[in-house]
Amino acid sequence: MKKNIQNTTLKMITYSFLIVLTYACGGVAEEKETTSAEENIFSVDEVLEMVAKENDVTRTLYTKAIVGEGKKQGMKFDEDWRKNEIEAGPLPALFLRGIATSIKKGDVPLGLYLGSDFPVNNANKFKGKQADLFQSIKKDQKPQFFYDEEQKLHTAMFADLASADACVSCHNNHKQTTKKDWKLGDVMGATTWQYPSDSLSYKGAIAILNAYSKGTIDTYKEYLAEVATFKESEKPEIGTKWPSQGKYLPTPEVFLDSVKKLTAYNTMKKLVVAK
Image (cartoon, rainbow, N blue to C red; front, side, top):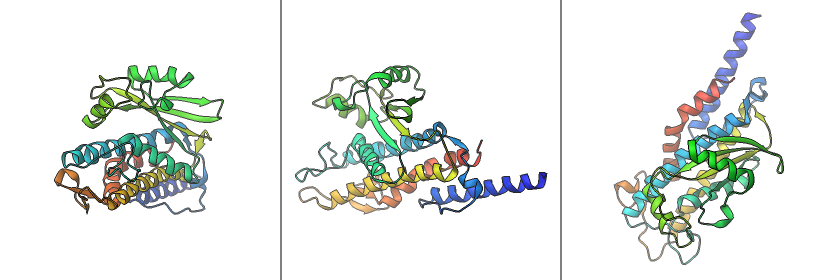
C-alpha cells in the first residue's frame, strides 16, 4: 500500500514537472489522460495568484524595457496606437487590455480587467464592493479574494503599482487625468481576475497560464505588425536586441523567453508542490 502511494506521488510530481517544463519553454503542455492531471488540487485563488504574478512581471518588463527604454530611443507609445495615422505602440494599460481581449477570444473562461479609483478612462473606475476592497489594497497591497454573487464568478484583485517612470509621467500628464501627483511605487489601481470554478486540476491551471502567455504573444505581435506599417517613423530592427541597446525591439519569442526566465521557477514551485 505504501509503495503504491509513493508511486502515485512520484507520477504526479513527474507529470507536473513535465507540463511546467513545457510551459516554461513557451509551449503548450500535451494533454494526457492521467488521474493526477484531472484531479482538482488547486484552489482558484492559488491559480489566480500565480497568473497575477506572471502578469506583474510581464507588465513591468514591457513598461520598463520596451516603453521606458524605447522612448529614450525616440519610439512612440500612444493610447490611439491602432489608428492608421498614429505610428506608435500600446501604452502599458493598453497592452494589458490587448492580453485580456485575446484571453476572452479563447476557450479558457478567464476574465481580466484593470481598474482604479482615479482612472484615465472613467469606465474603469471601481464601483460597489470592488471599490471598498480596493481601499484595503491601497493600504497594505495585499490581494483581495471574493465570490461575485451577481456574476457568479470567483474574483481576485491585485495591486497595480507605478513601477516605472513611464507610468507616472503618462498618468500625471494625460489630458483626461483626475490625479496629477502620482509617484513611483504608488498603488495606481488593481488588476481583477475572474473564473467560474472554485478549484482546478493541473491541466486547468496550465490552461490558464498558457492562455495568459498566448495573450501576451498575441498583443506583442500586434505591436510589431503595427511597427511594420510605419511610413514616417524610423522602424526599429526586430531581433534579439532590446531598446536599451539602441533602436531595437525583441522578437515575440525573445520577449516571452525573458518573461519565462523571470517567472518559471516560482510558478513551477507552486505547481509541483500541490496541496
